[in-house]
Length: 186
Image (cartoon, rainbow, N blue to C red):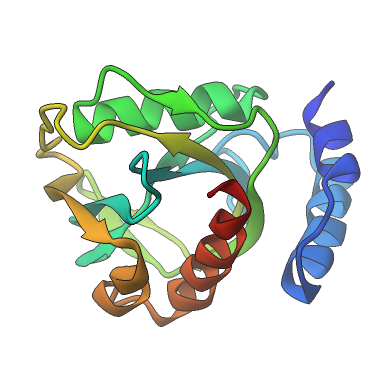
């Protein structure tokens, strides 16, 4: 199933996901380069909500650009297999080698605003991330490793504190939604 079909078939959880799904499909239909950063308006990203086996903790990174605790994830950069992107980014950003995929379906969708910033010495204009999140499980005892060019911390955080530790107000309702959804997997 291609990305457009995955998003069209995605069963939305709330009004935010319903609205964002419509916009994502519109962007796929309108832009040929929506999988690359060449599209300066919007492009796809993939993220992961990494939980422990007991579903009591989530693995978060301290993101250097956003100066906040966040989920793992990154740009599609031309790869239409967003699950592949999410897994690759989760491993790179945490040092984890063993990740268990709890479902190969998209776990959450959201459109995120990205404020202008400097990345690797270059100015990046404000734009949108069309994000698909996947649910992963990892062993808390596995050794973690910081990816210094992107984050300055990797920690298991009590799942109910995920909203609290992020400084990005736009992420609080997203993390709340993911935690509500996680209760289906207990």
